[in-house]
Length: 93
Image 1 (cartoon, rainbow, N blue to C red):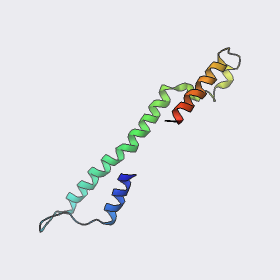
Image 2: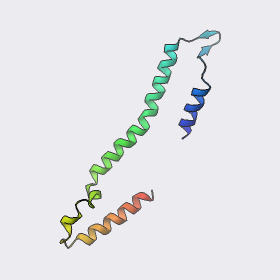
Image 3: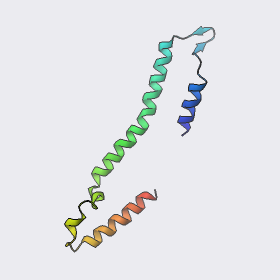
Image 4: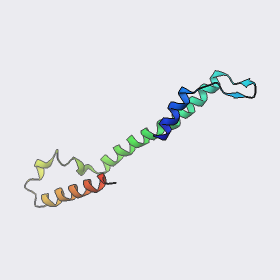
């Protein structure tokens, strides 16, 4: 959220980059914005990748879709309880 505030404030209050009386060219300013965008874009990208990896690592989270297969299984109740407890502990983090 802090990064978003900085981005909005910088865009609103943007002025060309200067060093003394020298004004840097616009392409240099554009490279700086591009570097900033790449770094900031990595945050949600890595978050999405980690969510996908977590779902693949724990396929039992999709048990509700295939629950009909386990109705006659004696370990069904244990499996359901484990999922409820695990999901509850993940939500509290």
